[in-house]
Image 1 (cartoon, rainbow, N blue to C red):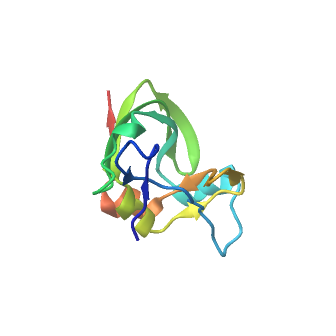
Image 2 (cartoon, rainbow, N blue to C red):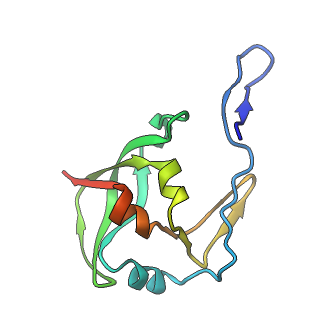
Length: 129
């Protein structure tokens, strides 16, 4: 379904989200369990530029200065900076494992998430600087 929001009666509506909750029928995993489940990959703690994502297609390309390299379920080092890109719709359509620290803040929920199928198959890309 589509959603629209407006800043008031003087501005046109645009795509927006008012109720986004990530839930699972399975119990959330601890950070250690998420890392073990991931195996090899990257742990991205924060991104810059999320506001530049394409709301119609779901494509995004952001930078991060807080990224850790994971091998065999263990954190083995960090990268100074990297680009992170992909498609949010494809990522959320794949296997998503939620962490046990899901928090609800107003109209949004957040917490640790791991997208294993996307990292292996659908091409979320990490581009080290």
